Image 1 (cartoon, helix red, strand yellow):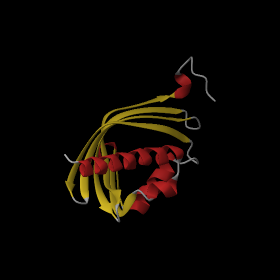
Image 2: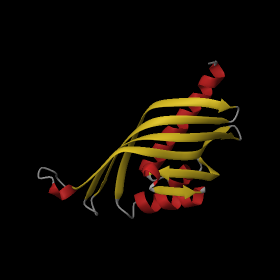
Image 3: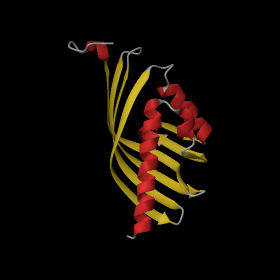
Image 4: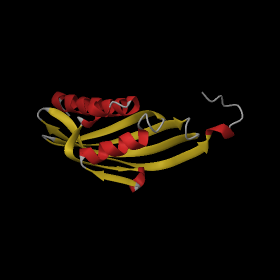
Length: 151
């Protein structure tokens, strides 16, 4: 592995970190810019599949947006990134996600592995495909936890 390949891998890591930050902070315009127009996603082991950045963003805004009441924090770990060509790469990431929604009285924890594909367009890496396979998905009613203080 040479220095240029290490620089490309670091740029892809930064792309994924921005994805999670924009998602958690609900910065939809910034998030959309991280995808190529014809990107695809496959979340929750295929439960949610979407084609094209407009469809992807509509799903994310509707399911995780402020109007819905969802608060999330995504933690990504253990990146395994392979540069597969001058402008292509793949990546595998471990995910731990915690979400709560006070209005819906829901708590959710997810453990999963992402399988991503990236393309370099105009000198910048973008998502071509994002998908994850769940290891576990826990949900509970928040008010059923006796010691929980709901705010």
